[in-house]
Length: 219
Image (cartoon, rainbow, N blue to C red):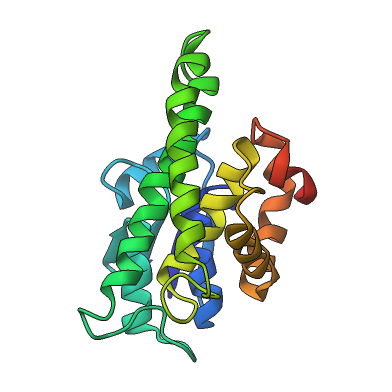
């Protein structure tokens, strides 16, 4: 049996859940509480840094959400591929997947970490840089999405990355002045796979330290 270890509020867990729901793959979801020592030990046994998510099938274990989705698309294909099997044709999807993880998700995470984990005043020092990078990322995505429903062909790998990245980043630094990106986010939210992810995360959204912007409509 295929098992995904993670938490419904975790952005990278959500990314993999979207792929699993899109593919229609049978799996078991093992919810992980990193506040519990037994669960921390479990994650250290299945992921090199003890971070979520991790994907397991028998003795085969994968970490890193993008690799999980690529493996799932190859070995548990659904009605529509999430990544073009031809290596060169898949590069745009891989590029924008990495863009969303590094230029959107990680910039957002810097602000969250500064508020939760760093000393007083850290957010005021970190946030201006991260918000400026988010502005550049939003503008690039807005240009990319002009005339496109999805980032790279049909719905795929990069779009799985997009919902959690834009949800959490948009809760901190809105992108409403980017019409193509805003329309894209609404298309994401309308997909059944993402509705399932939202429903699973809703009981935990109150834990997220930013309650404005996009996040407010889902609380």
